[in-house]
Length: 306
Image (cartoon, rainbow, N blue to C red; front, side, top):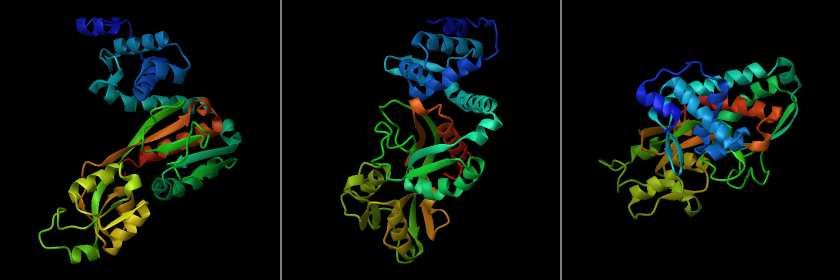
């Protein structure tokens, strides 16, 4: 049992309840990477040093923040609740260390990879505010996210809905994209009486190339061996097809709200986490950090809409 666990078990009062920023930073890194080795690499410190910081923080907080397992570290309920507070500390520390003169002097090109639906509905409408603040930063936007790879230097940072499993990257989960079952008004007008998303309904879904997506798997289960009315390779095509009355579609609320669509089921158990992913060696580059911070704040502020 480590020192902090012994103190927690015995209710021994630690020497200080004051939290060191380095310890909070270590907590966030382990929470995001799931292992001491991954977190230590991201922070540029030794594993032993990182372990001591986690133990010191748990001792100061008097609560266990992680469950230690052979496969890595997983957050306890108390640790999960602490993440937003630690992220607020992180944002405050960054704001404190970033001067106005540095903000004004930022320049260069940043290549951003993201899904087209996030780009068109959320990111692009907000970019004028970023450009007003950082006119010297030019942005290359790549929406073919399936082929853009940070490890191949196709992009400097990415907003992804799939957690990277390898590569020299730093990542942070920002929000969750929710999905619902939607139908157009024309389809509802001629929908078979008594149909409730079962065998009597027609469905619009992803083609075979995208059959692994959560929305595609959900529709496949509903179809129960039947063929869909239409398969597509893009969300925009599914939106238009649903509005035209071709069938039901599983769509992100972010895209479907405000369209000529009716949500039949708002919570279908289909959702995707949204991650900010940055090449580790570029994570401290001022121009990359500026865009990363802007996108993080934007997505976190829009969590309810997602």
